[in-house]
Length: 61
Image 1 (cartoon, rainbow, N blue to C red):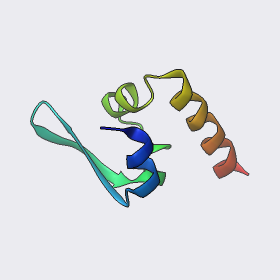
Image 2: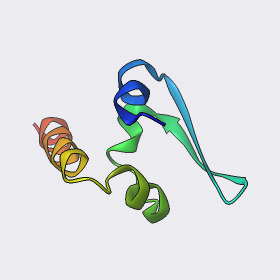
Image 3: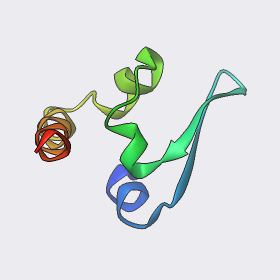
């Protein structure tokens, strides 16, 4: 999927891996998820790694 669209309009996100539900949450939950499979998929690109860093900094204040 186009992750820009998912993060822009998605309210509830379900990550399916190898035919089963691996993770479920909101677009905000993605940034703090400890699910390694989800993180490897979502944050594979350098762009999304930087987005995650910024979001975590914003959450920490």
